[in-house]
Length: 448
Ligand code: ADP
Image 1 (cartoon, rainbow, N blue to C red):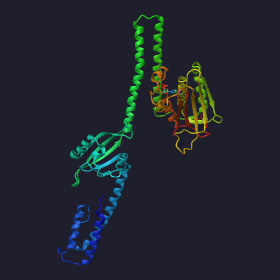
Image 2: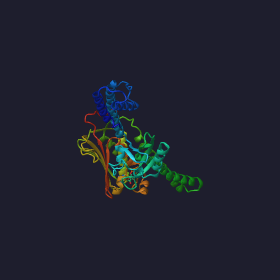
Image 3: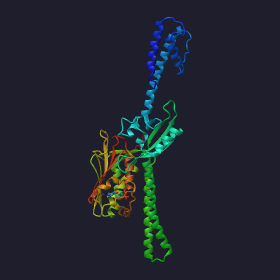
Image 4: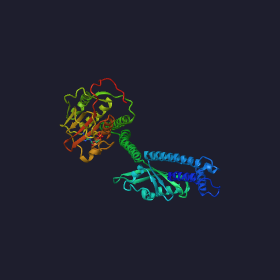
């Protein structure tokens, strides 16, 4: 900040020594004393607090005080510089200082990371070269020329085609302090995640509206026909049946939406030890009539040593996840097939962190159904994603089942895995961290 200070301190010392050697001389004819007086006078303009001594004999003392003042000011400046560097590097935003021409004078690490190809020579680059954005260029010029703060959003191509990054860029003018002219501080914030979230929300609302609109249109059509036309009793019954089916579909959709909303809300439900084997047996018992009606064999098996193993969780959410997996397995397995639920311990999810010391429990739902094509696997947990929209709607699915499963499991610190072979069947595995053995079943434990 003030690199001249140590040099000044050294000069002050040298001048003090000269003054001491020279002995008394008439005032005015002494160039060293005059130089010291000039030095002290400029120092006073910079804030040196002591008065200029009239007496030549007091000059060495004043010079020594000046030396101490410089040393202190230097230490303070160094400290300030360290603090400034720490603040700059600790900021989550990228910060660039631009000169009056729009070239980078200074950049923090976050800013440097925004242009990985240009490091280490960000200083000297022009703002236009970095951002390549006409709106931002206008904003920088306005900030520098009119002294008005500006804000713009800049879209930049991301690492993959079709994906762009969004930066919110704020430009703050800094008034001119020297001959270099005004400067501008540019703060860059990556708001891509926020924009993505906005897009997901918009898509979700559009999807929900669409999903509710189509059954409503059907209901209205049939209801108007029943109201306005002379129908034979059989046709009338068929139409009313369609109306009932559509309302059931709407009901299922609304129920799944409520489940998702509950899973997303802050969790007020306390966690408690949940016996996974018991949970699986209960679920299977409840789904058995549907499975049998569909001509399927439904079994549950608990690996030896797993009985009595617990996870800490919210039983209702885990049961909801298992219900959705079972419902899918039954729905997408043709008559004559098998659905098996397996509960066990040992092994670990592929996505577990290396070195994670926890032991894991799993619940697996295996079916011999239609299977899922490999290219669809990465998307099946998305809301409203269906492999075959017409077929899957007809089967009464809402398109939200696996989104609910994923939400519930991830909310328990777990993982869901899927393996599937088209035409042969699918296996969904839910992994959950095992509760420390000996945590008493039945006693509720509050989280955190
Ligand atoms: P849906 O309510 O339509 O079943 P999900 O979110 O539960 O929606 O599942 C998404 C899609 O994944 C389904 O539409 C279906 O195409 C496919 N799917 C899910 N589970 C299975 C399974 N066990 N076998 C075959 N396909 C499945």
